[in-house]
Amino acid sequence: MRIVLFCNNWAGWQAFKWLLAQGEEVVGLVVHPEGSARCRGEILAEARRRPGIAVLDGSRLDREETVRSLAGLRPGIGLSVYFGYILKPEVLSLFPLEVLNLHPSYLPYNRGAHPNVWSIVEETPAGVTLHYVDAGIDTGDIVAQREVPVAPSDTGGSLYRKLERAGLELLQEAWPHIKAGRVRRQPQPRDRGTFHRVAQLGELDRIDLDKEYRARDLINLLRARTFPPYKGAYFEDQGRRVYIRLELEEEQSGGDG
Image (tube, rainbow, N blue to C red; front, side):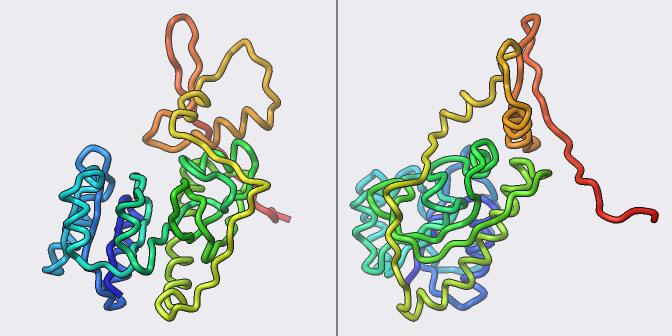
């Protein structure tokens, strides 16, 4: 299987390393450009150790020359891991075995951006899903998924890291079945689910000092947006903006007796 990996972030880097360690034939790597990339240096350093892997700029996928370069790799299957650009039909059509995406949510809940935040804010199921990419955003048939429990002390940051680890485990467990062609495709239900845009995070962040909140809702909002070094939720008073982070500590069971 000639693989093109669309990747970003720590999870993308780890998925790349794992595929190489399994001896998989990664023929192409599509990464974010400087400025929107995370772990770009680590991903590219890994690629340089394996001559012959083509590296393409994900921000140029809408250009004919990039599509031609992808086609020239004669890819069999695509894998997207934390990749932030939409794959359009002219790209998807290059892959006879289609493109799979590892999404950090329990689909159909929290399609789109920042699932770790919305799972806490809206108290929807959190998890990870491996699914086929279609013309929609996170709407393709499901291959495998796993729910990840959200603890009362979880923040947006701690849940994000849980989802990263769970996603990599899911990919590693599902990959042998994908290679063997033993994949059962499960269409996503149309009667439930949620979707969020990037812009909604900015709308969420402002705490209105004159608004009434349920204690549960306000705590969920604040802990969902606690993810250092990001600033997160804030309030404005006396012409100043003040950012808020929560520190949560669960009481340990047992005691001194």
